[in-house]
Image 1 (cartoon, rainbow, N blue to C red):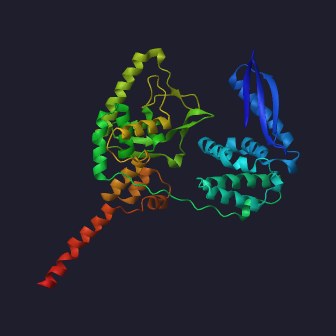
Image 2 (cartoon, rainbow, N blue to C red):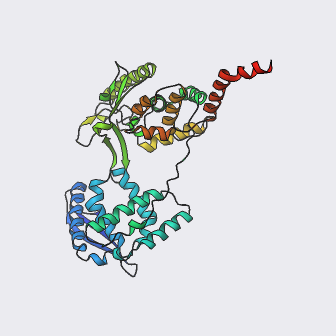
Image 3 (cartoon, one colour):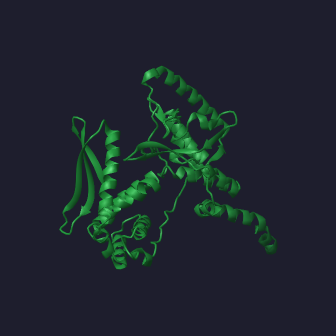
Length: 387
């Protein structure tokens, strides 16, 4: 992990961590530089990282695992891995992977070491084993590509089986109850929940809505972006790939509510005048976020989760995750005969197999409905025989 600190008078101290030596002592390189501000200090830190890691790279046989992880992040992770994914990787690295492998030399780590690591992780009941498998596979694959190691110890490791959580979305009656209960909530919260349960939008997709993606006349929303958050970057807008962009039709009553709310927000922005900060995308373009605070800044994803849980705490509704509102919308559509291909398009799944695998569950209500249909179709035959 690399960092810097402001030591005053335009000077910054840079720190680059290189793991630990054989005695468990931290290996750290430091440098003091002049910088006009945080942005320039960050740039000089990146340059210092490259300088340090290029020198470390010379002694490949003695590279500790923790030092190589920093090398891997600098030369691959920061540029090739999506930012939120990389943050999840860094959390897993810090919580269990580096504490286990950190001081070990890369060329000394064998397949058995990794087998034992996963065995201990499983025995301890730790989660995200599949993610840790992908992290280690990526790290050791690049270690071999870059000449740090001759053989990849991950080649003999089986991928841990992913334990899929069973989801239990709201049924028809619960959805009706939800839509009644939220009438006492702030308008923003009402609309965010309705877009999730009636539009099958993800959390980041809802709070990523801007005025230019909404077609009030045709009751349509184009889903092409999402709000993300990482500790390193804060809030940022992530655009979807062209092939992942989708346009969905929203119920007319909900679109009218959105339109009224949008007009109110425009008026509020005018009243705020210079106090309205707004939000910019990665290219510096100003965006008008549909759901934002009083200064035009969008909600964070965790803020949505918090207000959803607070809402559930005050109601008699069954507790489910906010993301399960999306599943509730799809389950409702399936129960009412909507074609699976239509659902695939609405969800934005590239492959219909993903849709089928996700929603292949059968609820007790679904099973009873099948039984009732069969009884109505064939039950009269037994009545005829008994007469």
